[in-house]
Length: 104
Image 1 (cartoon, rainbow, N blue to C red):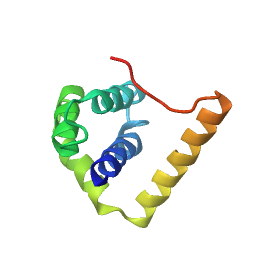
Image 2: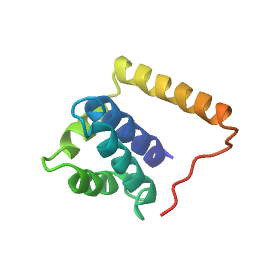
Image 3: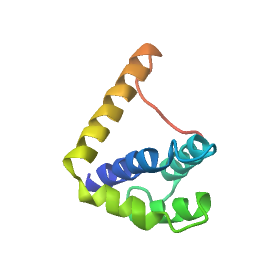
Image 4: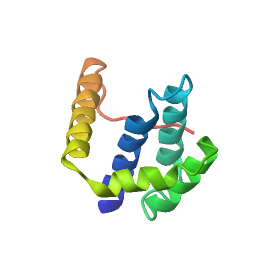
C-alpha cells in the first residue's frame, strides 16, 4: 500500500515542481505520470519506476528532488496532495468516470 501512496506523492511533487516552470512543463509532467502509471515495477518498486521515468523525461537528475519532496511530507505537501485529490474527484464526477486508467 505504501508503494502506491509514494507513487502518488512523486506525481504530486512533479506537478508542484515542474508544471509551471517552463513552457513544456505540463507536457513533461503528463509524460512522467503516464510513464509511472505504465511502469512494470510501479507497485513493487515505485522508487525505481520514478527514477527511470524522471531520467526519461528530464535531462537533469530530477529524481532526487522529487524523492525528497515525496518523503518529506510537510503540511504544505499534504495540503497540495489533498487539493489534487479533490480536483481529480471533481474531474471524474464532471466526466462521469469511475476510474482513471492509462492505455499503453
